[in-house]
Image (cartoon, rainbow, N blue to C red):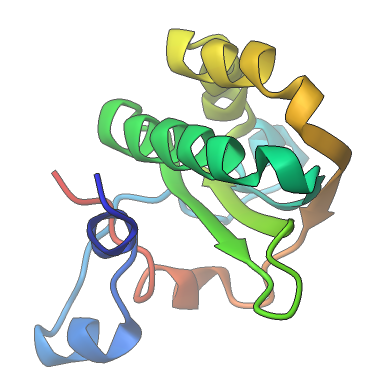
Length: 147
């Protein structure tokens, strides 16, 4: 899958959502109390620095696992890998899961295990940064899970 097709598959901009009226992406609602904590979205940014000699191979692996995860896992809302323009070995991946349970299920999939076991030597550094969405309802107009 090309990057362009991957991006089109994973994400649609709010403008197109507004043209079609009401958009339902099926993401978990973020209401409730601490008992609902398990059902809250898991949002984070993976900040990765790749060894230059492994960049091409890493980009292929990251693209494959992202596309496969979005296509096969209902709990994966978005896995959106990006490169810094000024520093192509600096990768950022926006990850959104419907719940903590969906995130744990993702970690157990064969395609994620293949990525995780096949890329450590390619990665110079990795930091997983938990994020808190400022507008969880607004995310529903940006991220649409395609069938």
